Amino acid sequence: MARYFMYLGYDGTNYHGWQIQPNGASVQEELQKALSTLMRRPVEVVGAGRTDAGVHASLMVAHADIDALADAAIWVGKLNRLLPPDIAVYRMRRVADDAHARFDATYRKYQYHVTTSKNPFLRHYAWRVFQPLDFGRMNEAASVLFEYTDFTSFSKLHTDVKTNNCRILYARWEQTGADEWVFTIQADRFLRNMVRAVVGTLVEVGRGKLTIEGFRRVIEAKNRCSAGTSVPGNALFLVDVGYPEHLFLDAEEKASVSSAVNDSHLNS
Amino acid sequence: MARYFMYLGYDGTNYHGWQIQPNGASVQEELQKALSTLMRRPVEVVGAGRTDAGVHASLMVAHADIDALADAAIWVGKLNRLLPPDIAVYRMRRVADDAHARFDATYRKYQYHVTTSKNPFLRHYAWRVFQPLDFGRMNEAASVLFEYTDFTSFSKLHTDVKTNNCRILYARWEQTGADEWVFTIQADRFLRNMVRAVVGTLVEVGRGKLTIEGFRRVIEAKNRCSAGTSVPGNALFLVDVGYPEHLFLDAEEKASVSSAVNDSHLNS
Image 1 (cartoon, rainbow over the protein chains, first blue to last red):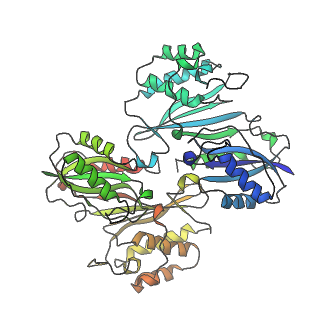
Image 2: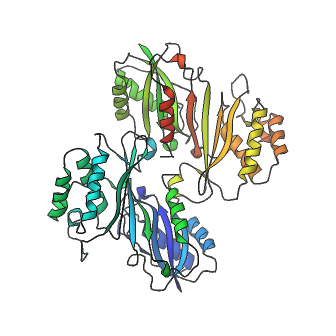
């Protein structure tokens, strides 16, 4: 028995999210089914976090305890043949037996895609906005996020987490095409629904419905009702998860992969 | 009454192709339905060419005779609200009454996407190849295409076209991502099924099953049976169609649009 981190990607369009649930397909269930078939016994998979219905991952990390693999690359191939076409395992890395995909993650990075024109190829991957948005103002507001750590205002109500504190490491809108913008946000951790609530509130700033000061007051209210409505999930991508190098028992470099993987989602 | 060129894009995944047919959804039918609703009378649409089942277009051009429009941009918006999410009209341009989307086209440009790894986001937009391909050799073979004009070997049998002569203007494989390659081919005209048969035969060269000389012999045989099998349609994109400037009765520049549009398909 050995613990492995699996680096995978999935198109969330046809899933009710990462986490297994009684009714509805989940990525975690598909992955556990494939691994259990391969190992000929039930295998449990623990993800770095849950993604909601329709949310995509160009890079998700999950751990599982399986038989030690002579050549992980071969098993990656076998897994991919068992998995549906909208889920792919990019790589498996041997880690310390107590390494944990969720608790040991040092950061998560998400991207939210917005398009200002109708694009047939982005209908499942970007949010179509009709009103003009002032992305300059939205970036002003985004920079305010760095001044705070308690993001209760952007959290789903009644969650079981002990603290609502997050350390924002990156938060910026960037133009990626003639009519396309991407919001990239990186933090040590995220609260349920947080990215979509942050984006929804930033969009109110971009529409001139909320001032920078108003944005501050939303955060300081520490009350979910003060924030803007959360935006659709199918435009949200989990794009990276970071871990301390010492967890990995194999020599190779992780950075190269995760970046290659990130290049290959929409930006391919 | 006035003639307009419509610049549109579509995700071909759910269509039996461009051309209207008795059973199965077609892009042409959707476009005619939307235009007829808008004009409150039957409107016929003529495309620059037909695309096969599953084939996408980041840029297709079609003409139709409709009421002269005070502001074409407004009608583009109305059309897009009537059209399904996987078809978008980017722009409408007033042209000479005898301008013809198919007969006046000076060139067409296609791209064929290949991925050498499993990618959940490209499953409808790229062809997954398992054997390693020698793209250098494939480009050697591709350059041979410029020496010929009769491409009978790459044409569907029993078509009604008078000549099988095409002038190749561009034909090259380029790497676009860690595991992604794109074949771009531009010609004054294409025969039915030609791009997919050319790609299928180039792939045989890339796999070492066919030499450059063998590729020449395939072309010189002028016999469809001598070429490789044609590759799947869902990795093929029509990306541009060119017309002489004098056809356009509006002042604006076309190039800017079509390039902006091309940026915004997969490369967005």
